[in-house]
Amino acid sequence: MAQNDTSNALISLTVNGEPHRIAVGSTIADLVAHIGLDPAKVAVEHNAEIAPRSTLADVTLGEGDILEIVHFVGGG
Image (cartoon, rainbow, N blue to C red):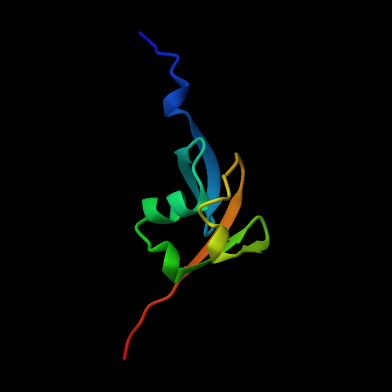
C-alpha cells in the first residue's frame, strides 16, 4: 500500500557533477553536513554563484540546483 506522505519527499540536484537527492526544504548547510563535511571548512558554488559561508544555513535548495563543493584540508 503506497503512502502519500510529503514529509519524505526528495529533490534531485547535482553535487560536484554527480546526481544527489536530499529532503525537500534542506539548506546548503544541511547538504554539506549530509555528505560528511564541516560547513565551516567548505567553499560552495550554488547555481554558478559563490555562496558566502555565512549564508549556507539560510539558502534552501531547490529541484535541479547545481552545486560545486570544495573542502579545505589542513596539514603541516
